[in-house]
Length: 232
Image (cartoon, rainbow, N blue to C red; front, side, top):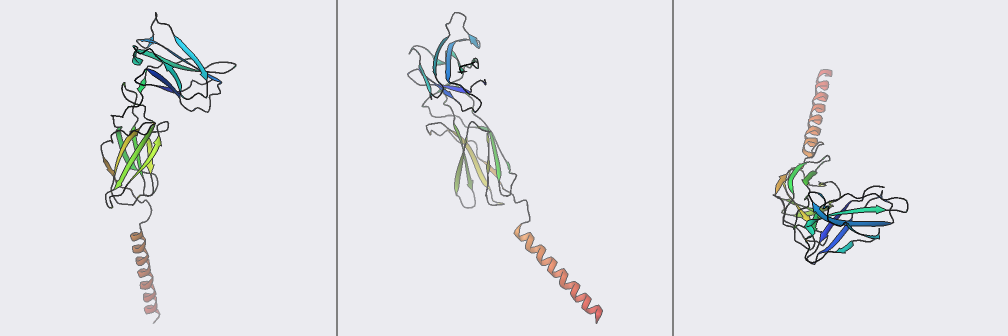
């Protein structure tokens, strides 16, 4: 049985929210959530491992810590459990802050020409867990055509790749692009440093096609006139 992917959030009342990420391979009937005091990435030897079991479709799993405890002092694990076996536990110490405004922008944003005509491929680094920061569920890509000043945006889930293909753009016009993170409850973080890109059209341009057509037509007329002169 595969190890379930999850992340943990904590609110100001020390409630822990275990969020299980979707997985097609996990066929579990229940989830066992566990936590223990962290000591250099392992459970502290004199600390009791605490655990609770919930139905697998419980979303999210909520556990209450004592108000005098710091959620950042614990390790957390989730095991998928079926009637026959369990996935085991893998500890992690990452805890996100619930109901917080994001304060960081995505880094290493890159804009490149896309694989199709009039497209731009935008990529970035995901925002990793940091104490005091919320979980980013969505990335929002803003893009504006400098020619007409019209700004649009598209979203992509944080579970997928950190990239988005912008299609149906206007060739040879400059677009300014920014990326920002969005929480599950719709809180937007700051935008990344604005970058610009110019989509290309890989096939023949309309002007090129007209020029070629006129050139071919002129060549044909010249050949016809030359043949007429030779005959006469």
